[in-house]
Length: 276
Image (cartoon, rainbow, N blue to C red; front, side, top):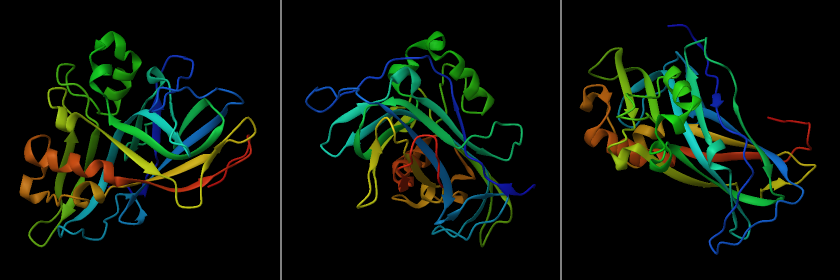
């Protein structure tokens, strides 16, 4: 298998829309001096960079994974400020495919760029993983180009079955197996438990996402692929015959998914500059 550093790939297909915002008391944040926020998803494995084609140290289940694909859908992004007010990014513009894959033909882009975000000091990010029921119920006409893009990244079943929100593949070894292929595909329109989930992640203590007309912060989010199988539920690939696409195994992985994300750090850059 060809070895390379995984590249986070973000594909977004959306209509141009005005920003909207909400809070727990239905108040609105004034969209004065808006700025740009970039979310960058840095995929890892047990505290290390995720490298495609390289074996990782055995996890708590005694299985050493070599990842060839980690794709997931991020949606419904919300920024939460220091007072608990929520800014909801326009829904029709808020569906993204994050893809880290051995397929060199896929586009290379690590960043989700949010435009016209109201000025403020934000301390948390909330987002969905998957495509929610409301969006799916709009049908193929409502899905537009996003459905086609999801298919290109192997993030769909048939339309009746809907989207996959996790596509996690590779090989693994253990004390009893050698180079077994594995497939973890989550998401079916008929299953509310494993079709869509959400997570809220806070910035590190002493940090904040500062947005205004002259600041363009970058938020670096770590996605730990190891946590998909170990966070709250121990999920052995061998125990599920190397393929998890529904049933008890999918429910356990779905429990782990929200726990796989954390904000590692924030760069509050001046507009036009970027850091890593």
